[in-house]
Picture 1 (cartoon, one colour):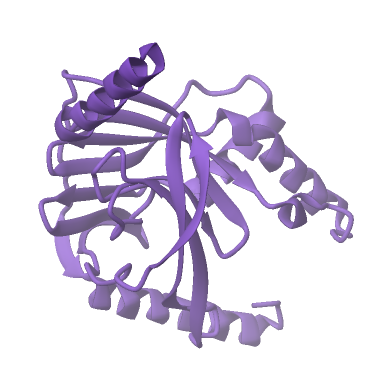
Picture 2 (picture 1 turned 180 degrees about the vertical axis):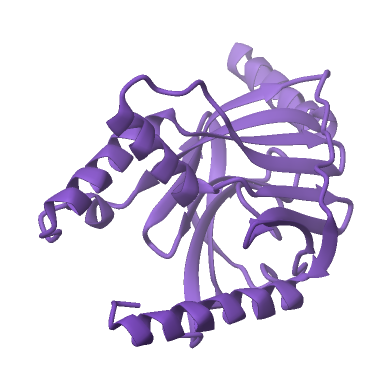
Length: 253
């Protein structure tokens, strides 16, 4: 009888949490796959040292997801500079790998990415259909006390040679928090994404979930608004220029 009562209270609490917990602060950490951490194949000593410092700095990189109702914002939390130059260098590299200075902002059904491209700050109208082909599996695991289900898909991008590239994504989401968002611009699932792995190389995993009534989401500013198609055109142009310079000077592209 006591067990049934405890179970009933737990179910009621979870249902209430799902219905009301719309003001949240989620902290994510980033990690590399074991293959990415393997430095044995890097012959250049300077590059190996640089990569080693980057890996050592990963625990200090914090990524924040704020949720208030139907609005969310994902960004990198900045910290005080390191006194050690090697650690500072590694931290800066880890920041770039994690998210850089990008800010992902969502409001209702609109998605925006605030990003610096070629020294200019843009507000990019993001592709709302990028993550609309998830395959939800029956596989599940517990993350921070929440039952999370595995989903997977691939999305299209371009490599440095401007050839089409399909990037695999694996996500673990919990229906117990009924907010369709997650780290970076990941969304499209019936619940909050607490873990996501991109291209089998980089994993973002939630380490803390706080319910906050005082969540304030400030909208970033940008000098120019463009579409994601226009961003692709700008990036492709940059890659072409880099490729031409590489061919001109005989350096590796």
